[in-house]
Amino acid sequence: MKIINCNNVNDGFIKGMDLLGTIPASEYLDSRAGQVVDALEPVATVFNKPLERVLFEEVRRANPFFHLIESLWMLFGAKDLDYIEYYNKRMREYSDDGTTLQGAYGYRWREHFGVDQLHLIIERLKKDPNDRRSVLQMWDPKTDLDKQSKDVPCNTVIYFKVRNGCLDMTVSNRSNDIIWGTFGANIVHMSILQEYMAYSIGVPLGKYTQISDSFHAYTEIYEDMYRSLYVQDAFDFYNMKEYSNPYENKAINTYPLINTTREAWDKDLSKFLNRSPMSDPSKFTDPFFIEVACPMQDAWYLYKQGEYEESLIEIQGCCASDWGTAGYNWLERSINNKNDK
Image (tube, rainbow, N blue to C red; front, side, top):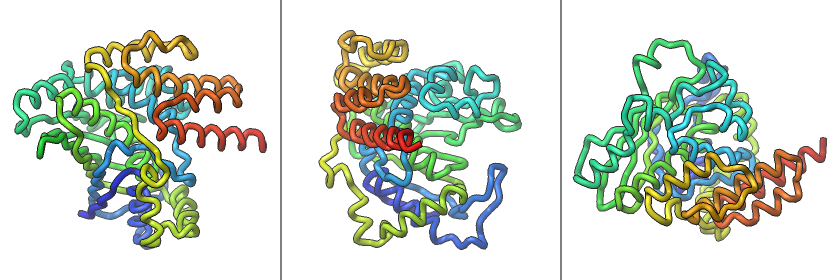
């Protein structure tokens, strides 16, 4: 097993791309979705600062609006296609019935197995911080093992444990695309889940470890990204340090997910997923929704409406400078691309 030890997603992305760069083309593998460069053995990525979850690397062009909103949609336990498709139209490609996503993680966490696993794990670890049975299941052999589906969970199981007074989380993944998964959506989804669980249990956040049985990237996308990073000397040891923590180097800050109580936050989450964009955010209790989630949602709405300048103004109202900065950068690039066309 290979181990990537990183500060945050930005550090990890460069190290992960560098690791795959050591695999010769003669060892590339074929898959049902195209040729991949694969690490050829399991890889454990250890995020020491999981709150630093927003990827700023320009060659990746991660969509922060989709990543944040999908994470909230997951925590609610949703699986409906319409809501999340608004933020990423490609989600329809993964729906079997055009209505739902059968592998939706949040639904697996809270509904699929007939029990709210998050609630049970919170209560177990509050009662006994030394518990070693706090296992969050996502893989269902009856549903997934021998079914032809467009949406079978890649992340299969999550282990929670309290060590040194902090909540550590280990996520097992059967097949992990490092560009779209490990250092894209997964770090956001899972670190937000970890933050939610830690707050609910009443302990600080610990480490997040992602164990990928197949750590890979599709060569069609990977090779161009790798070349761009190589030209920038991103893989040089000293330059790599500059990539390791834009949160520190660029004075970018995180924003707490929960600032009230979990019960009040959960009610706000339900309200948010039923909110009409541009409506008054003062009805929410937790500042996260007022100062982070609503500005992100409203900026996306204005962008989708073609009100580009207004969207750039709206995103500047986001009080989480990591999400706000990434959102502004994404909008600016996208708007410039549209104008060029």
